[in-house]
Image: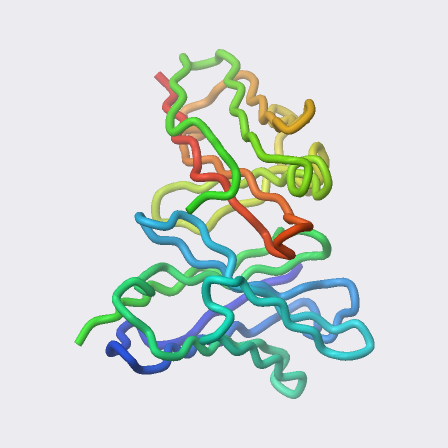
Length: 119
Length: 110
């Protein structure tokens, strides 16, 4: 049974970098059928897919257009985890952030991390 | 901004049947197949069905999904109090190369 354990700070200052990590148990981040996603949810934007990282003989990243210039994903095979870095955050990035995984869908979700961008 | 369109709210009586809809286009609902997610307040979304009508293990047969043209539907039979939740549809959009979501439907069980 795949489980995702999220960690990261709940408060980030404007213009700084938001960093979250999702630790995988019950699967491998190098699984060549799964994709590892980040999704956020806010009252104003609803559920918003931020992107995914996946391994198919090499690593691929797909990013949502809305955050493409500010986002980086880092899969870490040694720790079996993947992380999100969102640069130059503003209050509009305040949301609950989820990691989610699956093969062709998102069937496993982390519990979510509430991130507030405020000085 | 939601890529798929869902009605904001639906209310149905206990033990009745609710049908929730999700409208998209040929690049997402038709091409990608629709997944349905249930979310209770304060909890992460939970996958109910994927690629139109495949249920993950452990999901009740009371939940069934279908698609007609650009509109996908989730039918919930024998409504129970615990079915009161927000329901979201999602699909892979081949033109955007991105997952898109609906704005969600709040289901109230009367």
